[in-house]
Image (tube, rainbow, N blue to C red; front, side, top):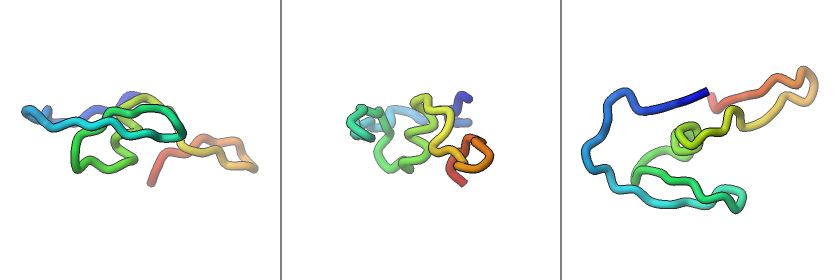
Length: 57
């Protein structure tokens, strides 16, 4: 799944954050969930019973 902003921001300041020892590029002030979604993971956890992948709610 690919997530991207609906409106492109002009010159948004960017920073690098570490998530599980993996560098992730994020815009300053952006939520962690959105930064992760924009950087490629297709899910955050898996339901232990059904095996269904979950994104943040």
